[in-house]
Image (cartoon, rainbow, N blue to C red):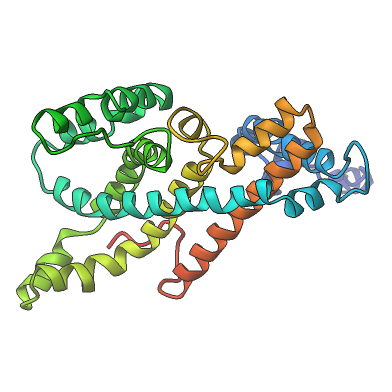
Length: 305
């Protein structure tokens, strides 16, 4: 009787999993949803302004859609700003990396590493304008440096170290070095000291240990550091205005974009110059990473030794 009753009951359908379980099975859970605020910020602060700039650059006030780009590359006063900016950004980046590597190698072995690191990165807290003001007071015609050299008889007239290429170069060097140093120090500190000890045990001197052990491990990280430091230097604006010659040798591409947008009131041309600026940066970054790929293929951050 009981078997008959059970057989007469309709077969129960399997219970459908809840929406939460089904989303979790697709990789969408509470942890994944935490990405949404960051994604919204990226869309609002980066993607939308970029797309707006692209559309603005191809909608000139007059002429065809490429009129702004044609004007830029047909006017030497505009397209020469690319060379002027590269002539500042590339040497500054190379010098900063050249200084950062030996200093980072030395700092990692010191006991008071935190104190020295704090001193070296202090210029980050000063700001570009304050650094420019300090350089004007120190390197200017009546600054301490020139006056000291004149006082001891090494100079008769002051050297021109500001309002030209060298003033901007010095400012970028001071403000860019802490950034390059911190990144380089992080890569240097990630190399296992046992590797160096093993090389020393096998008879390698300091020079061979650096060229055959440290440098191959540092190349991936240095390439990334170079790219980030270059992008920072290529976007120079306040230093070129305060310490350079905005209408002359240090008329960088950011000044050209600013002049077009806010002095000529041609926002479309300013957007086109900004897009060209981004493409030049991208070309250099791609070239450096491609060159890095010839020596190393692995994680973007490099190895940890």
